[in-house]
Length: 390
Image 1 (cartoon, rainbow, N blue to C red):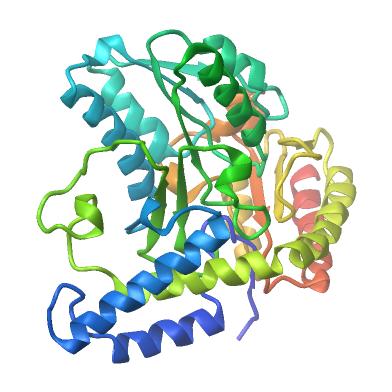
Image 2 (tube, rainbow, N blue to C red):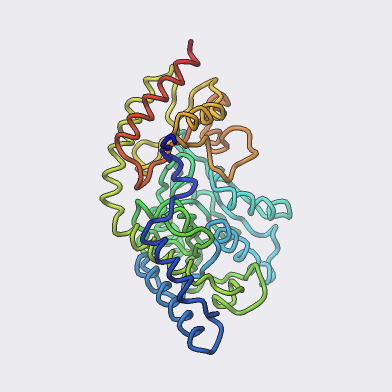
């Protein structure tokens, strides 16, 4: 059987062996309902409390500022919908509110806001440079007296660009000190914990999204940081779990897995970043030489160390991905959550022509990726692209 090299870590990260074992053991050991009064229930509740505390130490926040969810999409929706719903409940109309975001956000942010926009919400999009970066001063320039929320992702899932979130957060803090108010600041950090410092204190964010499956944790678990003083309404109704913000019997083993995965990511991120940077540099050095007109998408400097995103003009990269799969390499063209879109919405938002946005290849590394894998991948890619030339 042919060995396959997985190069789609931005879509989903294989569960870490230690995390998988911990989740398996937790499913067998902590099967009591955390809402029950008996000892098994109380133990399960204590385990969730410990997991929340462990996560809070990585994020530098209070444990009671964390809400467990099913993952990044739910966390983004809870942050955005929950906040806007609360404002409406206080008597504000959608037409009287502005939300600032970018055109390169994850679909769970963009489409969520699109629903409110159709009902009157003023949604404005901060421009990004051709390298995919937001200028903090542009964010500030778009804030008016009606602006209630800013939502900008920390690291982009397609092009790997890391935004200047801490600078934006500092400017919004200064605005609040000067004017007495400022919009709430949310960031989707789903792609970031394996490689970046996740301190909410340093980033100065009010809400932050975390997704377990993006960091070697189990699927179906994530969390939302909601800073003290930020008010949101629940999206679901039922029990009083998670402070009434997320009803339903808690995913005990998932909470354990998320906490362990986040802790491991925090411990390994510096060394892993250095290791992957070498593979990234190799790809950015070699791949542009393989095909005339090849263009790298996204900033080279402000970028996750595991992300390669390039465009090959007039190449059917959907078919190229299939050919690479046959050759033993699993990668993608864009975010798996953008299925159905023609070309890459993110690359198009950089101001690039359609020939580039419709011919993208995304390659993302992880802990299982070796330098020899990447050299073999580039060699195979060269063969496949040469076939297209001749």
